[in-house]
Amino acid sequence: MMRRYMLALSALLSVSSALAQCLITDFEGFTLGLNGAVLFRQPSFSGSTSTFLNAPGSCDIPNGLYNCSVISDEQAFSGTQSLKVAWLFRLNPDTNQPYPNAWLRLTTFNIPNIPNPAISFDHKVRVRLYVPSDTPDFYLTLGVRETGTNASCGGNGGTTGGIEWIGATSSQGNNAPVGKLINQKEQWLTVTFNIRCEPVRAFAGSTANGTLDGSTGALEQLAFTPVDPANLGPYIVYIDDVETIAVQPGDVDDNGCVDDADLLQVLFAFGSEGSNPADVNCDGVVDDADLLIVLFNFGTGC
Image (tube, rainbow, N blue to C red):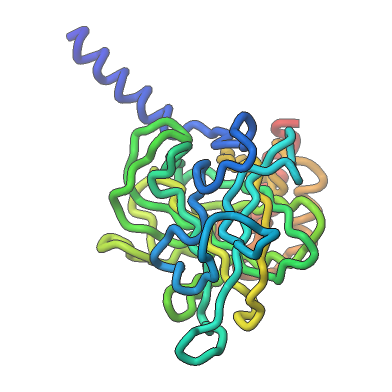
């Protein structure tokens, strides 16, 4: 009897652990210059997109080698370090023209440090980005693998299961996803994927079907799709403070407090359709229902 109770308690704690929110990494404590070894592989790693990249070697930007997913202290949202990602698209050697559907798949697949980080699909994934002014505009999409893991948040969530796009409103040929537009430069941006509210599209694997069939999985990749495929780059992006956060009803701006700022966002977006942070009940339109959720939860967490 006691043994069955302890096993049940252990299983419950395991599930609770998997659902906990966490800071997956802030890239602190890793050796500067470490390339393709922390959370995300170097750009040329994925066979899905290496064809599109001009990546003849390791990371050596002064000598034109933009194959970087490197620990850097040049920019940081918090602390002193972040991940500097740099890549360059190339011309199609058969046509001497840009690939019309080029994109970059930046994957966490079995990386030495923080591989396949486990996440709950009931939470939001939040990423901080710094984009220098010379980097062309791009779309950012989250890729999750439906592993059904019981690993703790940020632990190894595994590599078996279908991969779904989160936040892609469409996809181009060769599966290039069109996600969130990133066009603000020279400042730290907070990009949030509210997994249960975002559009979902199938990417890879026999079980990928454009829906989330489970509640846990792994943060498998970030996808970068150029707005203008003719603009080969280089593209340089700094990534910091990759984390999951709980969904707080009515907290539109994710600052932990339901207040006037959240109310104003709903009011300003009132009547909008499609993906919108102010659509707090995820029904595709900002309306009275969203306003009531904010009002009923007003003051929570403040």
